[in-house]
Length: 413
Image (cartoon, rainbow, N blue to C red; front, side):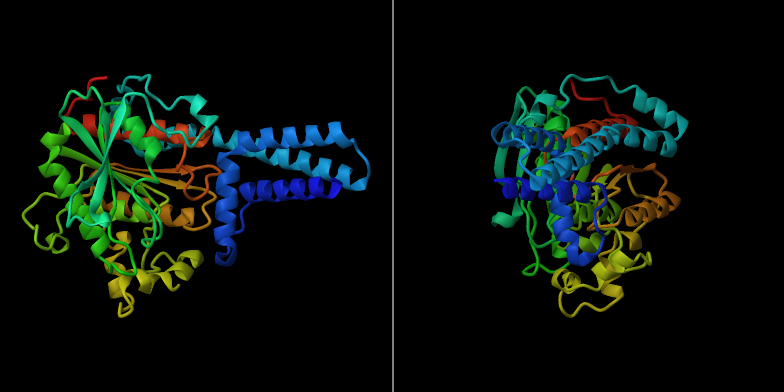
């Protein structure tokens, strides 16, 4: 018993250490990401589990020897780590607000402040069971076909059951390294939030590698944009305002969709359709596909086996790689961007997102906001947590600010 208790507390302390200071080497990044992500976003649950485990053990067995005392010390260290992580996560909303203050001109900050408070924000009771994400009054239509009818060209639509029509659209693109993932798994807290505010939200599937070769992933997303625009009336939506968001590979596709809205070479067979978007919120995305930033971790990723899987075995470096790189597509016509990245991301270094935002800001005529979320790991927003709630609320403000800035009114509450 004592040894089992000691092992559990040692594991908890290791996870807490991973949460606060994750190793950044690629060889350990998968383990570091999952441990750090779950430990950070489920810190309240971890604290409760530590208290129950230690309390139960002490009541049943007391402090019977050195192993028990060591286990109790490790439990205290783990609790301190998870407590520190929880305190850091509570700064997430302030980090985005600080980014607005730093990156938006005065008139745009004033417009942001005009957005009224709403009572539809993610309830904190959802944090007790963070995997129960459905919101009252939000309905979901599944597996609408936007392409050839295959499972990879379908989307889900989230909207308010009493939506008055003419709603702005938010398109969510899932991540998964361009090789796994689907529309049912990611972006749900933000989509449920925006649907509660009267938006129409769509989560899209797209072809995956290795079967799909770049730019098939991006072309599919553009087809989804065209489909949403063409079918907006049936969805109760406004075809003139489409925002796009997504995380990881979905963040990369978000940026590429927003930056190439007028590149008809990426619209084979539907060149005459409008696929431009009006706002972009990429989260923990890939922005350098050609190792142009000089970041060591980015260079390792670019030259890993993943790149030829996505681009095709015959892809030539650097030209084919730059064709898939958001950094190579910066332009003055980009829509407003809110770039969100976690400071503890072990898959995609925050420095890569920082450089992207800085360079895009120098090119674009529209505002570019960069928000680095303290303590956040890759995929931090997959389910509601203290951090997710705060970031979702601020992302919702940015999206509604973008809508107002375009001259449109907010949906009826």
